[in-house]
Length: 231
Image (cartoon, rainbow, N blue to C red; front, side):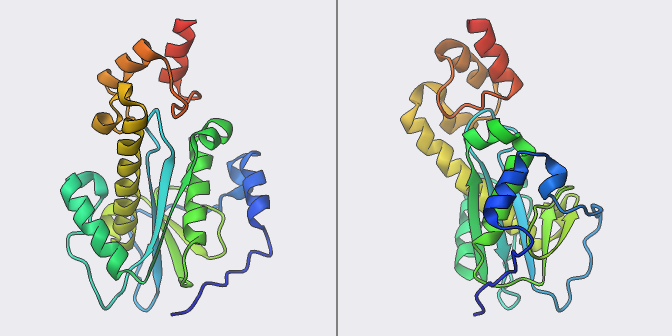
């Protein structure tokens, strides 16, 4: 197994994180998003996706996955289309059979400081940094790619088109859901295990009743408005 030795001579990790504070163009590779996955014949592809951009609480997660071409995993799909039971089953297979994977987060503090898009790209960059194998290309779900040392492509709805991105979607979603269940034990008054931090009526009602906990994203409008009304 080859260990990754990417060339970060153009931007070390500290510089990347500093650039995040200055705006998206400073750290995101400018690419034209694709609506159709290109051919990956002969290429070792790393798929990248995130989970948790929309919730009002908790970190945003990202995962990077290099699947083993000799061990195809059936049933891979956009994690949102799968049941929790299916996601957990597939997550175990992915972590067992993939050639390499990485899971990383950007914290609530980072989300509030640099905005959710920049924080998501930071989490993606961290996930790719954890890989122990050098991919030929990195394919990312959506319209942006993080600043990384590899050729990167953004693929719209890539989590439904590319198996490696689907796998990353599943790992990120499963890991984040487990984190929110853990937060529910720490902050039981919010019901995190039920809504996973998303802005449901229950969640909004609990914020109005109890205020915000340290895991709430205070830069997000619903939280900001509720806290402002409580003053």
